[in-house]
Image (cartoon, rainbow, N blue to C red; front, top):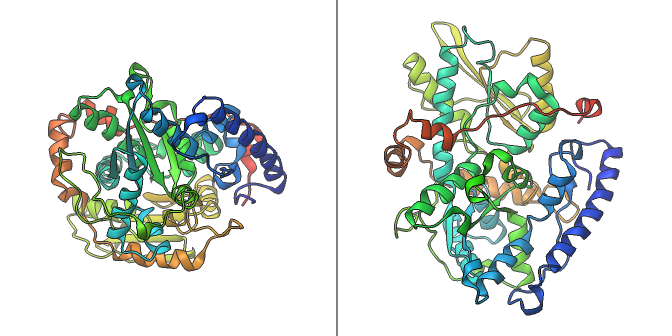
Length: 459
């Protein structure tokens, strides 16, 4: 399979690396001595290729490549098998967090409502031995709220700071990896510092939830179910590692498709699984119906930040947003006018071709946008390469259309209305303007030296 942001020569080299590293992962899995008495059977050659990942191999070190390959179903089964053994000192509390953009995939694939899909997926995971199953929507609440506030602050100091604007969204790890490794200093100072929902969920599970359960973070094994493979790379970032507990915020990322592979290996259909309500981070309560944020195919950063900025900066209440498609449906803009002047100009740029065009405009000094929601996948997060793909690696357009319909039908909840989030700001984070908020919900991005050849990638 050819990845969309590589030349044929690079992909050929990548395929060779894939085969070599995939073999090494199989060796690692079998060397742990667990397979002799495993209750969970070995999966039949289900492997992740670097060509499935949007980050090209020039953006990834060999060490990172090896660690990415270890984030597979076998790692989940390794923990499940450890928990079945008598040595309780090695047992882990297994928590799985599900991204909102993964649920429409399960709902469409198995002809279920999104609420039924969430409950059956939870039931399936718990039948394997998972202890807790969470929804990451609350983490997206935090990420959006912090992004909103940061944009307004940047806008207010735009005339004093050269790099205050434009601000780029920070939720897509494929985009972040490309920006740090290829674009370097051109855009890294413009990226919003709010962590992505995945990594905020890592902080919630290994910080807030661990404390609630009186657990050390290293006693929790945290798995994310996500729509794309780049989330695996994000989980490996050094800034998401706690040295004190020798623990990553996210230990393993499995794509939606990899979860379906587990079901197929175990001959289980979602329709045959008992429904179990998704867990809450708060005491013994269970989550209610699935909700989402404003946004057609993503977590809705553009829409939430636009409406918030319109109100905070200009006192204007925006109810509905009108998108204007430019070169294609994956590059659209939204503007706000006041007294005949355009005071806000936002854009959504999905897919690397649009990202490259955006960057070229920046280089030429013709970039007029205040904020850009950047996503590496054409079509947005629902079209992540970890789901809705045919056997030959192409997008399953029929399934994707169903997923978009399912996603659009999910009720929208504003982050500001989540009472748990507001309470956690006070009780856990010591106030919205505290140092702990910066430490827990924010990170930094910096340029990484790359070879010259990686700077001229064309799509």
